[in-house]
Amino acid sequence: MSMCAVCRRATQPGLHACPRHTAELRAWLAELPGQARLLEDEFLAPAAAPAQGRIGGTGRATAPVPVDLRVVTLLGPGHADILGADDDGTVPILAWLGAWAGYIAYTYPAVTRDPYGTAHVQPCDQAWPRHYETTAGYCVWLTRYLPYAAAHPWVGDLHRQLEALVDRVRDLTHTVPHRHPKAAPCPECDAFALAAVDGQEGITCAACGHHLTHADYEEHANTVLAMLAERQQAS
Ligand SMILES: [Zn+2]
Ligand SMILES: [Zn+2]
Figure: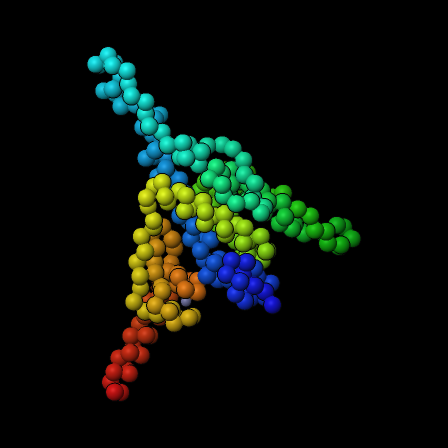
């Protein structure tokens, strides 16, 4: 039996992350680039370009621009230990993303066949996101490799660390993506937990991770409405 590395519930054979926790990872990866931009805009811009009026003028020494060191650390260079490590509050976003992309690219098996038709499995060089070494680029790349990550026990590390990182950034930006709850219950688990979240595609169930497009949801909601109407008429 396979088990989700996050919630320890049974999951599809061969998978180590349940749909709900895979959806959570996808949501955080979608959120992170916007959060990083907020950090840059709100915290680093004033330090890079001091307000004009403050220079010269009164002849008084300019007060030092308050720069939050936690922000500088998050946006700075550096390196990240990812396997089995926990967020100690000093891991920079880009270094963390790069370390995971590198790890996944290295473990991702590329199957090549030699002239005799024998298959050889070796680390996949091509997987390395050379052209995307930005927060947004890494997040897109990692999202694409989520199905691969979900098939490995270390997806639990990925989940735990990304949760800590996103929490740390939200804490500084005071921004949590806005949720728009939906009226119809989840077609998969019946929970009233469907919501669209700003910055994310489609609609996701917070209870089971089931994902629908907006069009699928409209169709589902109409079916539910029709069922309710029928039931009301019958009673
Ligand atoms: Zn789970
Ligand atoms: Zn559900």
